Image (cartoon, rainbow, N blue to C red; front, top):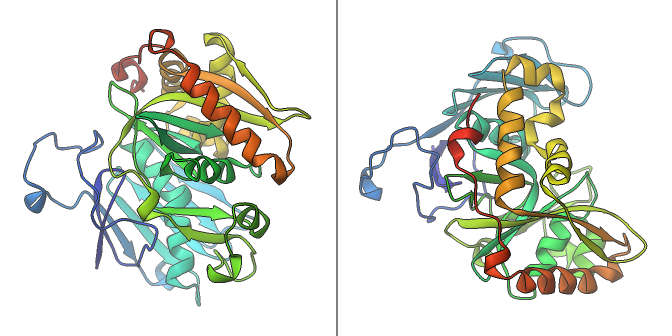
Length: 332
């Protein structure tokens, strides 16, 4: 079994997870046990197991992804060409792979949807987005698929920011702490070229997909940072940053809460509708939420990163919203 630390949790996995750290600090607010023990004595908090595909609980699903069953404590996801994933009680991920599926491919799905749901089961607020640490402030980028979240985060890193997480933005605690996630960025070759990096030196995420995995452990902050800014990305002819009031911010955030990607039926089965709303309210009250309009042309990336950097620096401390308490945000 392999052992890792990710999102402040000790993880034991039957498959290798190259995107996870071995050395990050623990206890960022997601542990079910609140005891503060020396690191070497802390128990494993998440276990990832792999079973024989022949023992899968249900036949493989047709289509891209769908939830077979869901409840407050358990969700089963199935991909027709990958296998079944059962996420249980915020502590376990069990996998029944299809024949011939590699551990590397299983790891890609574990570090995406499966781990996002596990974090939700542990009470974290999980958004579909990337995040960086800029002068002690957490800055998150949200948007639809292909909006350029990862690319912009890397553009910020090249200007001196530290990476926090890619794809999964997990927030926990009364201070709305953004937790360090998996230390790999997922980028298309054209984005890598724009960043001055060579796609040829990086592995594809899947053999049939051009997107590459960029290891970023050395550029990642090992500790959580208070989330202060959220930028909801959209296409615009010009670079525009528009601050939102609390109501506008709430409406902008709701679609980017990670479990919402699976539809209202799954939210109902998870009994997560109230938590969905409450956690987004906490973010709308406790962070500065802005719309970020930007051209899709990658050549605009340096100017977009410069604009975001200047905007964050210009936000005086007295203008920063006060983080909402997580008691309301974690209500179910």
